[in-house]
Amino acid sequence: MDRKINLGILVNNIVGESQFLAEHGLSILIQIQEGEKKEDHLFDCGKSSSTLLHNISAYGIELTNLLLKTIILSHGHYDHTGGLKGFLENTSQRIPIIGHPDVFAQRISYVGGFRTISCPFNQSEIREAGGDLLLTRDSVKINDYLMITGEVPRKNKFEKNPHFRKVINNRWLDDEVDDDLSIIIDVDQESFFLLCGCCHAGLINTLEKVKTLTGKTKCYGVMGGLHLVGASQERIDFTIAELKKWNPEVIIPLHCSGREAMCQIKSHFPEKTKLLNCGDSFTFNIK
Image: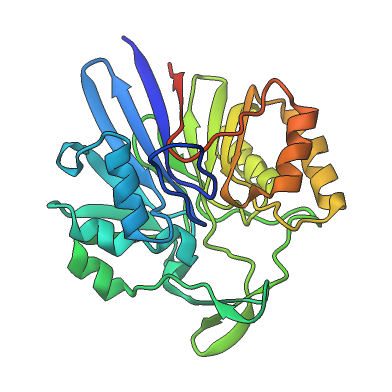
């Protein structure tokens, strides 16, 4: 039986010459086909529902035809959650939403000046719009092919988030973005594909968490935001050196990966790195 996964980029910072719209954010449609059986999952919702809904239409998809089983939120920043409420209001079904309990925390960034970067909605608004919230710190198996990492331990000295703060129980705290999670796609008995939102936990920390969860040491591919924008050269060098040890067959940096880091990754992995735009997709077989 043929089994394949298509990863469609619905929202991204970069767009080519097309009818798609770009914005600072990320949303990826996961389409699974197993013979005649099909199901869809939405990973993040971008910054605004207007862009998300426009690009879904530009992608040739009718909302009524989406076989959406879950919406998975990588973390609680506005550029990944801003389109959620409007998307739900334009669907006719209640949809399970998987994320971390801190997704709705108040967040502050000092990058570019003091500014709020929280999810623009609270839990009640999302429930009223049609979302059934499933909030957990743990890894969750969604089906035979998809699993979320849950919280990712921070083990190395390079992958840090020094510019974020959050408010929890009225306390002003440093924010290491503990709610950051990624999706593990089971490719075969030996390998996996890693789908990242922003990877605030760090790409290498996240790959190590996948190895702990699955026992697999072969990474077929990595796709998504790698949060290397503005990263030090030391961190970029560390990421590339460790990524060479994992030796993925494909690397697709998106969103917050940073132009400088993306160019350096491309120079070290020229045949493996794909620089994709909003509206592009990547398809691969699973066993």
